[in-house]
Image (cartoon, rainbow, N blue to C red; front, side, top):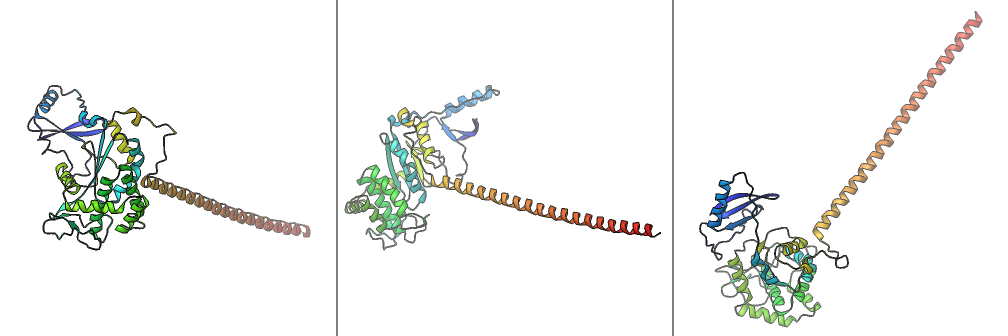
Length: 363
């Protein structure tokens, strides 16, 4: 495979020319290998014959500009949006996604097909336990066994809690509708996986399940079925391998990787610009339709920046007043001192003048 740099509006890109005309979709992937995760150059793989046509045109028309336009007709998926979220339950970033994207999820409700994909590792030789017991610290289930990574972003002491929450969230998604699942994720974020008051455990999860009027026994039964028979655990594991998902969280839109900023509005704009031709959903929102959407991270940064700027302005203003006051006091002192000197000089001159007159009179 050969790579060629191409110019694009606003920057550069890369065109990858495959060695044959038939690209094997099951084995050839244009993905990030983590090593280059900070490289944001867009790239595209094209068959050999197409690449030769472009190369030949460039060689024969060196002074001409070539514009390459990319369209993804298959990505439209018959007007449906297939959104898959690859994640692990110990990652706080995905909980922010659920909170921020809820409004856009509701806008897309009639066309959205959402699937959560939980992360599992197959680790040979690891101890395994199929009991739904959070007191155990064994991070694996089943005979294979399927495990979770013990190094987690929330820095939990017991990896078994992560494993059980993976199962729990999978079952809530399978047993109930998307709105119930979404509500659980937002409540779990606020009450169980909050950094300020971390309470990531079965008790906290059970409390939320009861508050949402979900059937806890039914969810436990589903978790047992996932452990005792093949199902979503195997499906999720196979999807990670098939899609070559290396780093998580990862979002795919109609099987195409989303590589841009994790902002709810940005994701929605990408869906409307590249995957959905629906003016009713994607048109500009009317004032009555707009909800105030609080992006905690961005708005907090703005508030902190504004606060620092205001504090700096007040400090400069106070300092300026202090300097002016000090200058005025210093100037007043100098004026008073000069006035006293002038008065003394005048008094001395007057006394000398009086003495001189007396001497003239005496003579």
